[in-house]
Picture 1 (cartoon, rainbow, N blue to C red):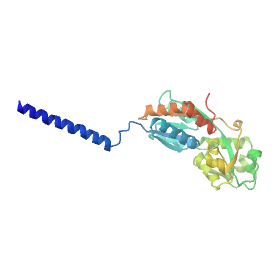
Picture 2: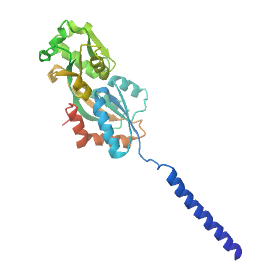
Picture 3: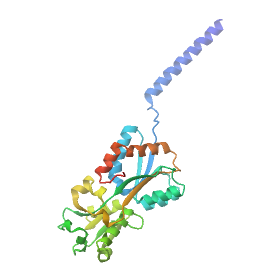
Picture 4: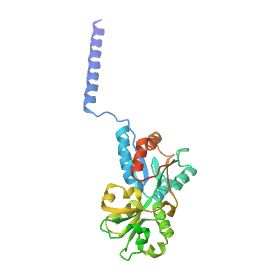
Length: 267
């Protein structure tokens, strides 16, 4: 009996030590995080809207957003070659549809999230009369005009179409400076490296550009609609998190942020 009592006493001491150890570890180590990152490839016209959207999403869910910005066409090629993104937001819904057709997107996840607009932008130091629209690009003082590269950036294609619509393209095509994406084109004019540019309205409405210059909104009839679309990628290992972000964007708060940056929302 004494032997059993001794064993029981030892067992109680060991259990107490384990409990105390667990408490100490809990106090010293941070809690295990159960949140998931969501990795997003997004067209660069979403730069400021998505930084705000992502910050709000993180605050409400605890899930971290890893945002990569660039041209829709370049991301399309990267995804075809296995780039590890969870979500793809294209400035041209056609790219998103092609991924769906190729079986690279989660079936039924295609979401037409916005229609974009383009503007003619000049810095505050410019004396050009923006009310004349794209005709001001013919002015001799305009030496360099920034647009996104139309080969892989939908906003660049829209800029070329608008210049053709207003019959100025042939006269100004040698003045064009091509940005890798629409954000880089905006940087060219905001920095003064170019005299004018055609950029996304969403960038012109961002605080820095809004303070640094002025813009003229190009009529939507001057180019094909900039219908933008998103898909969840089939290769994603965080499809549930990707879907949660998409649902957050579709909700009231997400839609209000998009509206503030000049996006026309899908009906």
